[in-house]
Image 1: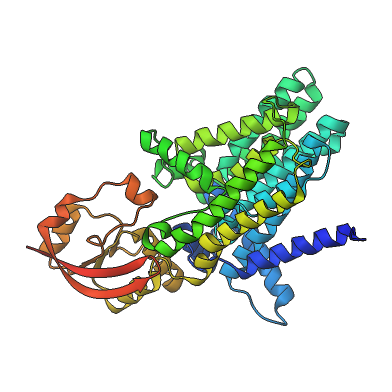
Image 2 (image 1 turned 135 degrees about the horizontal axis):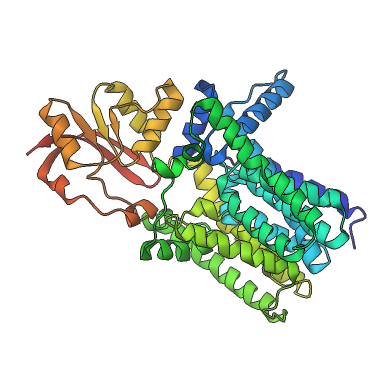
Length: 479
């Protein structure tokens, strides 16, 4: 029997999913997250070159949320930041659905569910990061441009062009999105000077706003735009390791996995039956679909977007967070699967949800993965000692978040013999965690072990347990 009000049921599911994301927020906030939260608390300047307007927009929205809810309770910035990411992730899913409808000419809530429960989507929809809001803007802009292709309503084009440009002002990664979309607009309307003129006039606002902010802050325009690349915050290079990381991270955008599998055998056992169900249901669905590698006009644009983003990721050390758009774009390229059995699609959705709940949402929400609070306690008890720790940037930003001290000089982010010897010769006490075993992750893969640490002796001063294993902090001395 069909439900009499499917629209109500859909909106109920959307609100339930939003509530679920907000409740299962990530308590293991990362390096950038604590820096962002510290900026919210202590800094008057919320502009960042790499994501120019993002913090100011989220700060203002957080203030509005707190004003509205002040008669009940006050939200901390980490709660509002994560709640806003969850909200804009849901908005991004709605825009994705509208684009999917244009491509296959029908509603497709199965595809929406696959993207909703994707690993990378859930990972950043529940975290303090800057990737969800600009993704929503780019998807919304793309939908409006596609609408213009369909109906030639100039208001759709104006809005689409504006939203894609506005996405760049919230993260520079979306310059790639703008570039691809601009290429296809030029290809389609090469001699339509009205459309081309409108698009480029709107696009001019991006450098104008950058120039205005850089001028106000006393920076050279070019230096400010490329600030993160010039000071080393955003690195680009090419190596076989980058290619390997893309091959690993691509499936992780759907099925999240990390070092949990290598430190907890129970999780590996849980993974096997879920993987069997996933592969079995994908196989059964694939049998009902006749797939031809022939894209329509819209899918050619989506395919170009996907390739361009992956190419950028390839030169950005295989950065997982830059792949947040991948599930959206991949699913938009797939054919209509409405002929598949409902049971198979339902089983696939459930298996995908269970995987990312068990291996991502639950541990990130309930477990202490890195032991950051223990490191901070050790630092507070020894404020004048030198700390050389593997997660040095994370500890630095956490100290900034907790105490308002930006870039504390006694937290060193890399174990270098010259620096270590210099501090020891000056009589400083050094605490470090470098002798600890490093779990298999992106950092340990990209960096080589410093063999010269064997030239020092280490006295254990702190020991504590995290979900990923036991950690120790040592006092470092000359042998």
